[in-house]
Amino acid sequence: MDSNTVLEIFKEITRIPRESGHEAPMTRYLLDWAESNGLAAKRDEIGNVLITKEASKGKENVPVLVLQAHQDMVCEKNANVSHDFLKDPIEYVIEDGWMIAKDTTLGADDGIGIAGCLALLKSDLPTGKLECLFTISEETGMDGAEALEKGFFTGNTLINLDSEDEGQMFIGCAGGVNTEAVFKYDRVPTGGKAVRVKICGAIGGHSGDDINKERVNTVQQMARFLYPEIKAGARLVSVDGGGKTNAIARECEAVIITEDTAGLKNRFVSFGSDLKAEYRISDPGLQFETEDIEALYHIDASTAFNLTASLLSCPHGVQAMSQDIKGLVETSNNLASVKTLEDTIVIGTSQRSSIMSARGAMADKVAANFEVAGAEVKHFNWYPGWKPNVDSPVLKLCVESYRKLFGKDPLVLAIHAGLECGLFLEKFPELDMISFGPTLRGVHAPGEKLELASLDKFVAHLEDVVVNFR
Image (cartoon, rainbow, N blue to C red; front, side):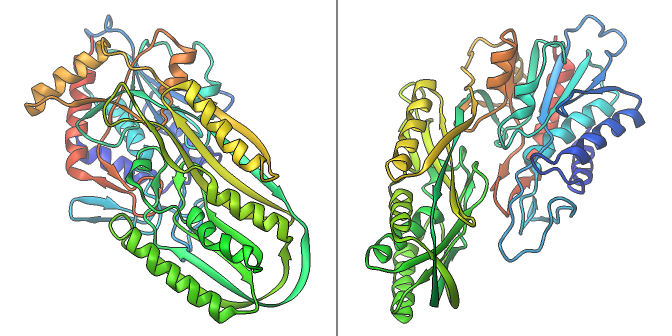
């Protein structure tokens, strides 16, 4: 097993559509791959797959080891890119030591974890029995982990391959929940000149890993511009921005009817200059666009005001830092998206916390913000955190292996992002777990990339751990 093998398998995976909720081609690929390699495989009702490799000769008494990755990927693209994630392969380049998808997400989260598992299964390394678990819909609610039934796998030690910083071993993660707010509105017939305004070019990123980087949230910043305009009598036709609940909004546009289109455009340009100055370090590529259009209707004034006011006042970003682990984000909220439909406006948000009572409080705070403005609110996709175990046997093995291979200790951390390990532990409390992976950057946003040098180290470390597991 070597990193070239893992990379070639991952390149093959980039050709397989696997958007969350549409993993059937990936599931079929895994089952066919197992059959062609003479390995036992099974699929549960929801679509989770387990591929098993029996122990090597002389390793029959080694405990079963579970390796786990998720089948789906976050599908985000730049607005000007024509790409159908349900059928098109991911386009990437190898550049300056990185594998990069410049206009879409790459899917190394968690396709590289899948590739690592398949390379191990295909290798002739001397190992105990391996069970490779591939779950579905991790990115949109951890549906696969939630639906796992007792007995689907048998091992009591699990290595999750869904982390994004080589040299870091993760032994804990945040829990989370999604909160959706829906405003109903009346379509008021009108005729007149309107202006489409757009914010784009933001960095975005992972709503867990990157929430502390103070990057611009285009949905909230659009609300910041709209709020005084609506108060002054402008009529709102629509506002649309963001996408997945676990991604920071990179783009947002709104359509506004006003008697003074030239003045509005000038104010937007001035607003853009201010925002560029405020975010000159975190988001140097911010762009602001305007376009004259015609509009046939607008959102009733009361709803338009309540909508823009609540988007502006909604908490976003880090809300609390851990009092136990220095530098760890404890609680956050991501104002992820807003979408104007025929008679409703739908807002998506995501709350995370390593303390479950704080997770609930954050969800209530977000709900209250929108309920007081007249929206209907619901919570869904609750998932638990993963409490660190510093006495973990697999942690000890992984640290010793890393030290032996690279002459230094890895960092042992908890992460603010959500991992399926929290659900695994809730359903299988006897599990001993750890999570690690190669270095990825820009996950959940176009430009996602994989550092190839880190892949070499990740593969060497994974191989050593699996071979020496006892």
